[in-house]
Image (cartoon, rainbow, N blue to C red; front, top):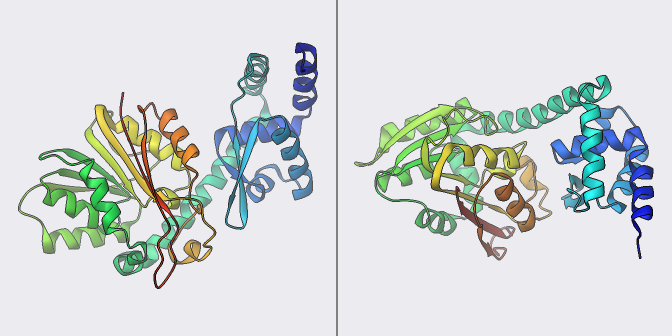
Length: 318
């Protein structure tokens, strides 16, 4: 049986090492792989892995395999003693020059993720329609739309790409705002709209990042991220922004892959993440201030090319 004294000793031992504190502060801000922590901290893999092992044993981080990588995430402690100790540490780090340098280096690493995805989508541009056919997800898209669309609904289509989903939404009478950070994708969407605009609904295209959407608070009635989260540097931040942009009572819907090991998706589809655990997705929705999540899971698809399992997650903004 663990006594309060035992717990305090474990807290002191765990947080006494400055490297462990730096690592924990970084993964609290952003899920990271060891290679990214090495880049931010300028330390060898063996040292970082050793400290991650201690933090994992203490229950402060979790790990999830993402293809050939392992992603480490902060796990908020449930113990009051741990919570109080970590709050004290965080307050002390606010004026610490090393911690500030770490945050700057972390921002650079996250930006590199974003540039990787943007470069891929700028290169493929209008060819994306043919490439993305590998998703074979027309049924998923229809199921998602059924949860979302009413006539004259104001809808955010995050990562609109070439506008396939945006045109379908507009065809159902929605007023759509399509957001993407790739000029090539937006240009392809404009051409598609000019050539095949539906008789009802409207489409407005805006350039912007998923972590800082070019929309006001509560500007739309609903938001959807269709096969987008796996290509974003910070999926959690994107859901937080989606929740901000949707009015109270509106809906947020996300469709994406369950965890898998298909490394070819990194190069062929611009994936930064190889799927997501449903518990992680639920946590993101909760952190975004959304209500109870309705999550539907679909088995992997067998065909000319095997595809991973998928999910549709939806919730109401409270």
